[in-house]
Structures are given as structure tokens and as C-alpha cells.
Amino acid sequence: MEQIARVVLALEEPDVAEEVMHFLDRTGRARVVATAQDDRQLQAAVRQLEPDAVVAQPSLVGASWSPDGSFLALDTRESVASLRAAIRAGARGFFIWPTDRDALAGAAAATATASVRQVRRATVVAVHAARGGAGATFVATHLAAACVRQDRDTVVLDADPLYGDVAAAVGAPAEEVHTVADLLPLGTELDHEHLSEALWTHDAGFRVLLPPAPEQAAAVRAEDLGTVIGVAASSSDVVVVHLPRGLDGLARAGIASADRVIEVLSLDVLSFRAASRALEALDPFTDGDRLGFVVNRATRSEIAPADVIRVFGVEPLAVVPFDRSVTRAQDHGRLLPGRGRMARVFDRLATRVLEPSVAVATAAAADP
Image 1 (cartoon, rainbow, N blue to C red):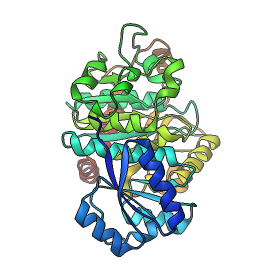
Image 2 (image 1 turned 45 degrees about the vertical axis):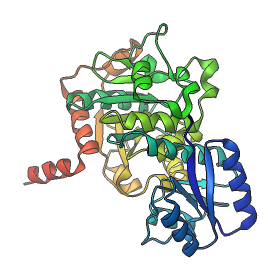
Image 3 (image 1 turned 180 degrees about the vertical axis):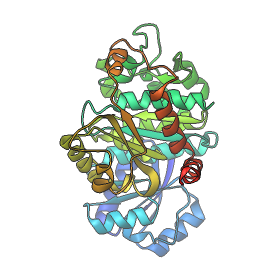
């Protein structure tokens, strides 16, 4: 039986609230069980009904109150005040109505999965690069291998079904393997066994959910990705989500589900500019410590890794040195060896992402 997310909706404008309510109900995967027009009504509805998700205008959710279930912020326009209010209230996503309605439906539907699956135990890491060629695929796959070296059960999900770069980068077979397309008919009936049977295992030890054939890519929806991430997160230790460059519904669903978001940069003006523009669009999804940067293919240039601090206000989680063997390895569907300088870079990155307190303590102990 398909699970339906129970949603409490809180919007100031009755006409907009009615549109959103009818839209969510029509999806068949979310049902509005109560509506509210102020913070008092919202709190009362949440206490009484214990919904899977709260879809609300950020101005109606006080910073001192955290709703039960997932809080999905919704507004009719994007403003600095609305974004800040969403961040203060702990929103798991920020959506503009009606532009982002499909992404909203996917995020809301995914909360039903969380209520019926085992308790989420994984750290979900979304890897994104705003500029093509910056190295998101390289970072995602080698981070997964590093997580396995730390004895973490690791799953890689390729959330860019059209291009499917992960499959090529890890040398996955093109035939006689399952893909995400095999899971789509299951909807929210997807469980751990179904997912496990669909995963392909790499020699490095991590498992991969391969992308579908190109003609099936359009069938993968944001809510499908949210469901898969939810199941993977309840049955593994680490889920690495390889995001598409474009900020479509799949990218937003992946980021909304992530505990950590890694933005991959190369040392050039266009990469920094693209990342800045992407992060402006994703601001409410990347608040606080969720966002980190990885500099890839670092070499001597006018732009240095230290410029990450100047432009983005934080030091990079890792600086991956330029290595001529990377292109050759990826062209042949191979990862770099699990030992050596490059492996040590990714081992440190895995520690910083999965155990930030340990990484900080280690760094402090190393200071003179």
C-alpha cells in the first residue's frame, strides 16, 4: 500500500493556500490534514495531528519553535527576510509557489517514507559542481571509496540520470545490471531488499545505483529520488549523492535530503562565479555547517585555495592536487589507488565530512 504524507499547511493568503492544498492532494502522495493562518493555529495543529511534514510560510514559524516532522518553507516570492526566517526555523527546503511546486511535492512525499522506514542512520552527502568539468564525479566516487576505507557501508546515488557520469567513471557494465528505472514502479513501496538487489558493487567496496538508459531519464522525478535517498539512508552508513550541475528538481531534492553539501571548485574565475550564483539560489538549503568546499585539480595559478576563504568565508574542506593520471584513469573507468597522496587527501576529507568534531580536534592537536 502506498504511503501518503500527512501535511499541515500554513499560509497567510487563503487563495494560495487553497491552490497548494489541492495540488498536494492531487499528487496522491501527500494529503493536507489541516490548514493554519497564523503561528498559534499552526502550533495547535502540529501538537494534535503530528504530521509528517509542515509546509508553511517562514514568517509563520518562530525561530524558537521547531515543528515535529520536516519543515518545508514555502513562499510566493524569494526575499532575504523570508530566506533568513526559513533558515532560523530549521527548514529542510525553501520553495517558491508555483515555480517549485513539483520539487515541493517530491519533498513532501519523501517525508512519508521516513515515517515508515527504519530510522535514518546514514550521513547523506550531496556533491555538486556548478561548472561542468570541475570534478564533482571524481570527488563523489573517490569520497565514497575513502568512506569504505573507514569501514562505512557506502552507497552512491547518481542523481544526474540524463548523463550518468558516475557509471562511466567507475567502469560499471552497460548491460545485465539494474538501474534506478527498475525501482520507479515501486514508488513508496520501495524497501531495503529492493534497493539492495538493484545496487551494483564496485571493487572498492561501495555500491552504486546506476542511472537509467537516456530515454528513461525523464521518468525520474524529484519525489523518486527522495524516496530512494530515504531508503538508502536507513540501510547504510553513508549515502553519496552525485548531483546534476543544473539546479532542477532532482538537484534540489538531493540537497534538501543531505546532511552535508560539498561544492566542488576549480581554481578559475568562471568556477568561482558559477558556484556563487548557484549558492545564491540554494541559500536556504546550505545553511550553517551543511555546506563545504573542495578545491579540485589545484595547481599554481592567479587564484589560490586561500581565495575560497576570501570569496566564500570558509576554508576548503580539502584541496585536491592536480594529477595527470586522473583523466587517464577516468577515461578507462578506474579509480585512483587506495594508497598514496591522493588517497590520503580523500581519507582526510571523509573524516572532515563524517566526523567533523574528530577532524577539528586532530587539527587543533597538530597546531604548535
